[in-house]
Image (cartoon, rainbow, N blue to C red):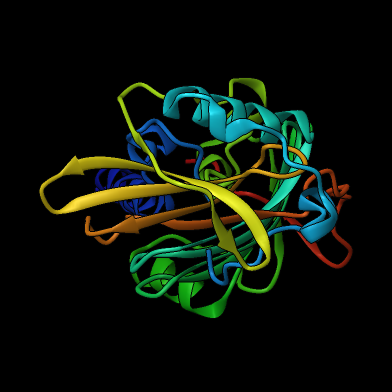
Length: 253
């Protein structure tokens, strides 16, 4: 009976891990495309507004523009990404080694994230903790859990951070269509449209002035995980640090 209970707890913990985890970034890209959208205002620091000089990116092919944009985001060293879908909402400052911010999943609850090098922390709300407890797993609400980024529980809580956007920026794998330069909240951008299928398309907006950053990802159609994303605050320090307050060891599952 004891072994059966242990197995049941492990299964519940695995269920929590799956509920928390985001679909892989590659599954969200499909162009490929870099992922994390609430509002549509790009970074004023990197895009430089109306005074920025044209960068000539509109003269390149759509695939070249996309690859140049994801590389520009990586070269910035850090950025803020705000992503929204029917399944989740995130607001994160990220770099290759740091990540801070919040994640909300309507059906599960919300949590805060901190990653700094080989350390990771997550703090869940009462809704997440209640769901876990009802299924046999004790997770403290309102307390920081500490572990490593590779520990299963924390690995999935911080799965929204995607450091690979800096270490291996995405390249276009299909043939998107380039549009004409348009205005996006005062910044000139080149839209690139990738037709995924008859019911889904993804538009990427790349700055045509200043650095050629990818500023926005907009999805039409798709499932509940289809994310609209806004990138901003390029080069802003993430400033991750160990949290204050009570810290407990994250469950090993």
